[in-house]
Length: 158
Image (cartoon, rainbow, N blue to C red; front, side):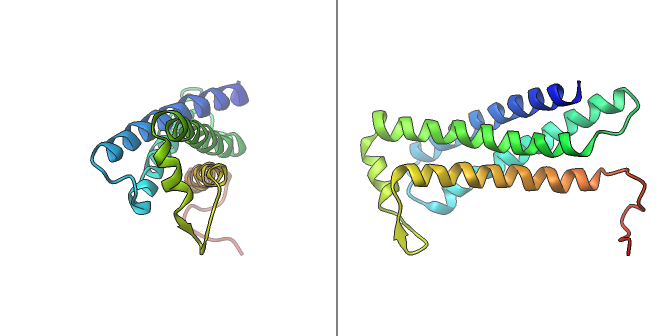
């Protein structure tokens, strides 16, 4: 139950985060802020929120059974939310840049990332990697906060 449940929760909230990021993307395009890297980076907040909601759902499922949620499936939820959300979001950006607004593909390719320009697929790959990292790190932090494995909460063991 735990793995299947964790997978379903991760995919569900990953899709939720993708929808939220796509709406955000369309909004920033509508208001003309799509060329700002900082504004586009703000879409990652939706992955963070989705991971928090997913971990909370996961914990509630286990609390209903009077058990502590297992640590590794909790981590996998964040990884899945980030991977699914960022993957779907990047696929939408690719579709938008190729079919709906071909000029935007040039904008993405001509931006200077770390001192050099990247091909469009590498830019979108970096979106997926960043989203996956945000999801994984968020779930890592949350699962550490909810860890009830026997150590004293808030105290380091040496």
